[in-house]
Image 1 (spheres, rainbow, N blue to C red):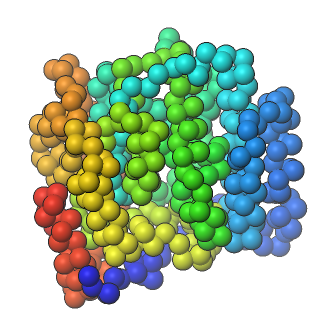
Image 2 (cartoon, rainbow, N blue to C red):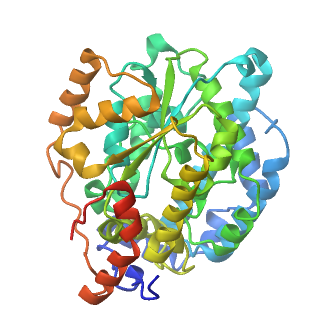
Length: 424
């Protein structure tokens, strides 16, 4: 495989910040922001306890993860004033959710007896169409999804009769749209609202052992720590949360989305042996450009130095992506990912003929699409013209034609194996 894999981070630059954000961060440079917005363990835990009136966080396994995380954030993330405020608010909310979930299980131990049957996970590399596919399939009545509002505020467990009028929806909406007010270009990259389905990492913050944290902060010491841990613990909490959410509102299957599950699919299948996987496929050379733009913007919410930790080579660099797909192909061929439990969807085919593509994927994993649900899916897609949220501009072939050609050769096996056309 080629040794020439262009690092797109070297050419990415953020958009100018809104004036209010720039002024807030500039003022923070003259203040003792670590004292004003503390991120120490005692302060965070005490605030969560005070806000909830609860004290039991559950087992103590999480505590070490939390300590490593906040130390890394404090020492490595280079938070600006705005980023520090956002981070404290988020961490306290995650701690509150952990306290509340623990309390609900103590008060209602029968939640443990909830069964999760054949959950469907949409997986794929970033920017491969997983979000629109997830949203489309959420219109199929056989699926229960995790909406953004319940990912943020899982307690009390949602109830079917108030699910679409829950006051937490409005509360969550104000927080969910904050990043786009900090970086308006975010609206062109990723559609978000309290009522939309979200990927799994959005409800795994409270484990403090999740890839979500190094997707949000440049914290290399946490990444090093994370990669030495057994992620099974996180998947156990994943199931624990789904049981809670379906206790008062269930459907035949969960529909979930988790691009970050790609490296740990064997552990996912240990937790959910009957899970069905739908892999989304798209030109990896082109989408890598978009991944860098999106990820850089996420870091830019909180820091003025978005690439300081030089992290995430596995999603930023083409060579690492090739290795990831080679592993997945190997798991398919050796039965680690069992035949009959996965389907492959090519993004361009989905765009050209969505319902036929969905029906084929359902066939491969033993599901059916009824006519009424098909109409609902098509209605959603018809309501979403191209670039509905603005056009996400990003460079393609950023390293020049020669490097792009070598990267294309590196992906030859992937594209041939899954029938993925080139986009550039």
